[in-house]
Image (cartoon, rainbow, N blue to C red; front, side, top):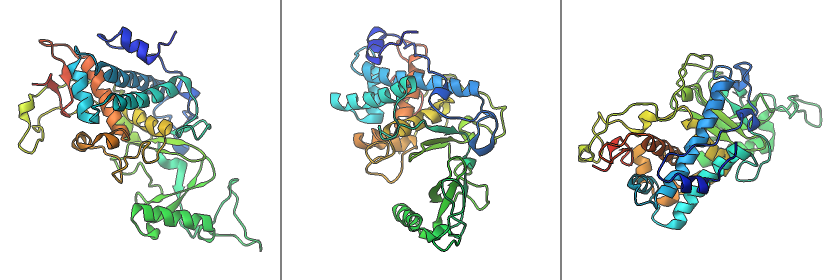
Length: 364
């Protein structure tokens, strides 16, 4: 199938929904284990559903690009309302930057290439649980890239704490997170035979990043880029639950509320259907692709004025441009919302919109 460039696609289809290019098999872009659920394996997700997620990520990128192009279209006020609300993008330069970030993610899905803002040419790994790495103690035996014990010049086995580079990484991470050194632990990668350092996510040996139910996914960029998707990103009960149901794009019905249903503190009525309600299965991977492709640094996908990314709808709507453009969840929400809007039925010329963070019919 011939693939249209995004600008041509938007120009031809400015009054209709885009026909997204089909993503390649996800195994063309990621090393992923679908044979079992061990060491971050994705058998409980399955290759078919992973490919479907990857395909939906292309569609989300297309709708993000289309929202930026439709901003200039006087017949598409809903694009202007959405983009202005989430990005505060009042100049062409700003809108071009937002559009380019959507485009870079789309191009990587379709064409591949380096990750981490061009700094890494290795094919990334995609895992579906945190158990590809296991928490250790600084008093545990240090291992090398072959997984063998490290010995000093006298042949004595060394502990992780005996190696200066590891204690320095631990110290710097603790300082950056504002915690004590004792709260930072080494994690041994069972896929690559190296150490990451992070906080603990539970008291049990098998606990890790996915243990808190609020954690959906993360991207670790280093010598070996790894995207981890947690079972809860698929609404699965565990890493062995393959019975979960796939949620496609714009598949959840909503009831719209008038804008005047906002309360005095600018919060929506509790019965309002928020944007989070319609999130498709692809939303988490789409978010992580911004980290993977654009990098994790400040000004890349780390908002410069905040210690962490913003996930709350109210918080995202309050971000100024320089922080919103570095917040991957803002891109995911805008793409999800505009896909829904452009695939909703018109009533008296108005579509279902989410510029207020909840479902409205137009701007009334």
